[in-house]
Image (cartoon, rainbow, N blue to C red; front, side, top):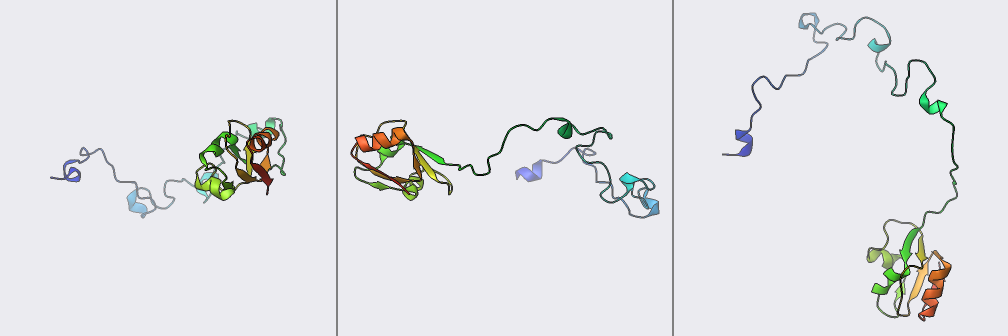
Length: 146
């Protein structure tokens, strides 16, 4: 006995869909339940989701706010403390960071100064915070901007 053989809907609970436009004798032929003429009878007819009966839409009544900087660079952040998992003297770039699961996607990398780094590493990234640069150099490593 299989589960799909046992489970059945209660008789009368599942109705067949109404088949529209199947001839005059079907009850939903000719105009297919749309009535005669008018906006809602046409293909693609009806009002859009933002329609408010002819008054100005809410979206257009509200004031515009803010500013979108189209030149903004969206960096993938990596903390100095996260780089401590690499072996001493390693050369770390975006490919190695992605391999270790520190960053996702193809975004420029910025190293930030949170955490401690107790070993010399050569870190290559697109940007560094001042504190991250200090911590990398203090541990005997190098910070190279790509």
